[in-house]
Image (tube, rainbow, N blue to C red):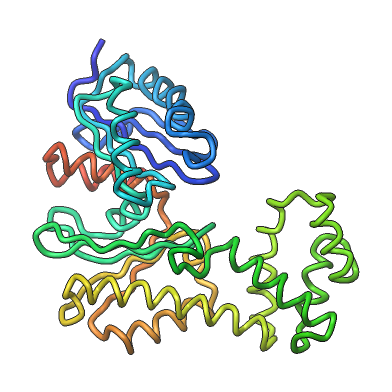
Length: 326
């Protein structure tokens, strides 16, 4: 049995993937969550294989087998146009829908933060595990960054902040850097006493590498207590967020008009006062007409809204859909 008019909305991140089946009237007919989406690590085909059981699950919840009308897929690691094309071809080949749209997952954040029923125009910066920025301007103009790490000029994101905290704490303890409470707080998080112990535990894998991400909230807590070294790291993160937004606005020639700047991802959505207030202040200086807007709804909402855009859904459908996740 088919699912006439329904669409698949996919938000695939590094650590988790959300899939939703959405009716043309804005009703959510099924949802499923799975693991991370990492085509650079496993390859395009195996990465899309992760989506298959989630798609099957939501189709079953919707009472059909597919294909549906459209797939709206916003994917982590779809950082370059060539990667988007390869992923679009792979998903199209699965036969899940009559048409497929693939874009980087930062565009899902942007869509979630923009008004419905108008030409999409604005900028989004995501700061979660990593950092990225995108923008949409007049007549479909796009601004984006490769966002593949240090080789593409990136600075920041939760993983990077944790590493910066470790670097600064190590130097604070051994004398190569200025004193910082990070040298005590980071080891203490793991029940250790010194940075030397923490360095050994990480180096010898007694602490799994992924656990260093736990140190990002510790960094913010130490910064909030006034530690100069920790504060400098958080302030640098705010600077980078504003830089991404301002450059995207400039590229799209939107600096001169009121434009929404959507902020999201775990680091920005947490609204840490030191980070958030500095972002708002610097954005007002660099782009006086920009309007900061924090999105805390799950990014799959943006994928689902995009699916409604593709279907030409009525206004009521957007309201119904947003109510589901907000």
